[in-house]
Image 1 (cartoon, rainbow, N blue to C red):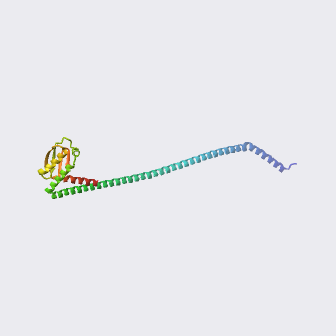
Image 2: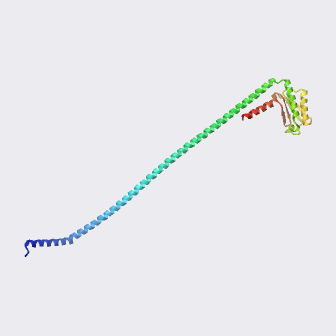
Image 3: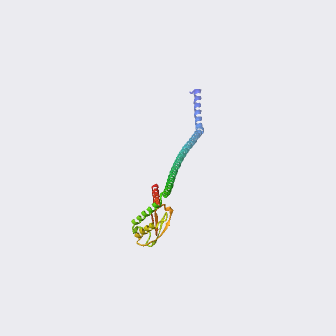
Length: 248
């Protein structure tokens, strides 16, 4: 026979099992299903949150990379600008230096040219003055006797000329000539000149005699287009021309 305490214990166990079965059927399963559904939703939300976080991280990384690229582009643009600025500055400086060198060279050439012009002008002026003074000095020392000697030397010079030399540039139509001298020529000297021309031209030429003090001394004859100049003025002019060539 079962004692009352054991019977009560068994009854309580049976009741507990029945209650557990009831709770398991009507309460635990819905709660468990609810918890499972809640757990699934939480996991889904966690997945979504993780995905959002990943997308946010990817966006952040992309944004940071874009910012990094922008910074690089800005830095590169800055470096290019600085390089272009340095190059432009160097080109401007070099151009300015080249222009300065050219200007200095131009000024130097102009100065040298001006110096040469001044030198040439001064030498010409000195030469002209010297020739003029020489002519004036020679005039003072030439007397009638020396003029007569100049005429004799000129007549001898005519005798040394040949027909071809005389006709060079005068043509065959020259039938007259003008004889210039510083002082009037005596008849004897006129005949000497006439004979000298006649011996060359082989024909009688009409002579006209004139005075020209600028000759300083000696004789000058104009025969057609030909000029036979044996004057001191011509000699001084030749000396002046030679001196002028030496100064060039």
